[in-house]
Length: 124
Image: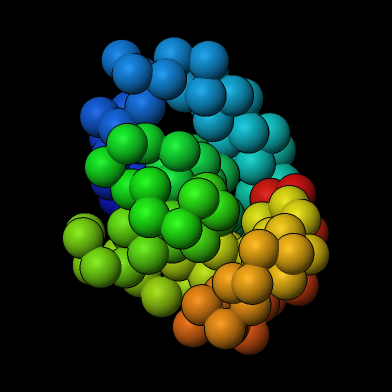
């Protein structure tokens, strides 16, 4: 669970004070992700980490493109050197492919692919 603790601390440092509602949401998503642990096996820790960190792209320090999924994944990859699979789940969560297409960011999103459908479905 070290990865999840690391992601929790990172997300808290980026969101808790400046975006408390977003931080509360991330904590709820994390709580729900923990309920999926029995079905995910060894990927349960990765999902827990992605769940708590999935919205770090909203943090001022991470905003670059304006699409929070990509911005969060880039921050995780480029600033803190996170696991590529973690970055991918963050990049592809929710409606990211559709939104990236609408914003002309599909090529940037592709940097984090291919998405792992089971993990993306679990976090969404």
